[in-house]
Structures are given as structure tokens and as C-alpha cells.
Amino acid sequence: MSRTSVVIAIDGPAASGKSSTAAWVARELGFQHLDSGLLYRAETSRRLGIADLRSPEVTAAVSEVAQIPEVRAAVNAELRRIAETENVVVDGRDIGSFVFPDAQLKIFLVADPWERARRRLHQRLGRPAADDEIAQETRLLVERDASDATNTLQARDAVLIDTTYLTQEEQVQRIVALAQKV
Ligand code: DC
View (tube, rainbow, N blue to C red):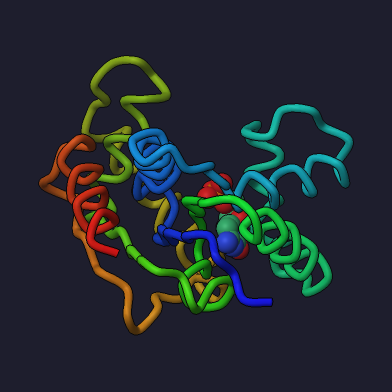
């Protein structure tokens, strides 16, 4: 049976703003938001026996757990099961390229590593970060990009959006405008 629901795939590297953007786009469209990274974190936290999905321990281990083929198969099956009956905005690394190659709209978000680090720190600290803090976080992010690289794949037909100089509202409005045309 072919799917009758709508899938919007939003992929991109760590701290590119995928999840918050996907959540906002989903709210605007009345779709369900599926955060695939959170499913990998849930499996990682189950294995480690740790409850907080965004804890440093889970964050340090999740990339490796997400490499396990059985884990990927289970996460992908769950995403596809939900999308059979619900309109969804799904964010991750390989959603448009692999999990939903037939998604009606595919977005790939990118942003300068320094800017991604600056945004992430501002959110975490609740204040603007100093340059040396941003430099340190940029290094961690670039390492993280490398460990996630095998599972990060931009679909050929994805719309690339560089958010370095966009506000979150601007990027959401761009995606919503594209979604209204599908
Ligand atoms: O987006 P995030 O940081 O919550 O993702 C957690 C981890 O899961 C990260 O190491 C990348 C991995 N991941 C993946 O391999 N494939 C996805 N579709 C989503 C996340």
C-alpha cells in the first residue's frame, strides 16, 4: 500500500537547528514532529541506564550506538510506521536520502560551524558566549560532524538552506512556503 500522508524531511549536521526548526514547521502545518536523533538517544540511554536523553554521557555515546545496523533498522521502522497514517516533519541525518526517499519535501540545513557553536552555547548558557568558549565548542562540533559523517547524507533532490545568516523564523517561513507548494 503506498503512503497517502505527507512527509517533510529535514536533515543536517549537529546544531544546525534541525529539531527546533522541524518542531516549529510541524506546528505551523499541523503535522506531527518526529525527532529521529531523539530515538537514537533513547536507545543509547536505555543501554547506558541513564534517564536524561540530552546528558553529556548520552551525547558522547549516541554516535556509536547510531552506527549499529539493527538500531538503525528499528528506528527507521518506527518512523515509517508512524508516517503511514500521519503527516509528519522528520528531522535527522539520512531522512530524505534513505528513510523516506519519496518524501514530498526534503530540506538540508547547513550553517557555518562557528555560528552553530555560538547558537548552541547561547542556548545552553543563557548568555552570549565568549570567543574562546565558541572556539572550543566549534572544535567539539567538528569532531562530532566527523563521527556522524557516515550516516549524514544529503539527498540529491534536497533543498539546501544555509542558515548562517538567517533567523530561525526566516528559515521556518522558507520551509513552510515550500511545504505549501507540495
Ligand atoms: O540530532 P542529534 O544530535 O539528537 O542526534 C543524535 C545522534 O544520532 C547523532 O550522533 C547522529 C545520530 N543520528 C543518526 O545517525 N541518524 C539520524 N537520522 C539522526 C541522528
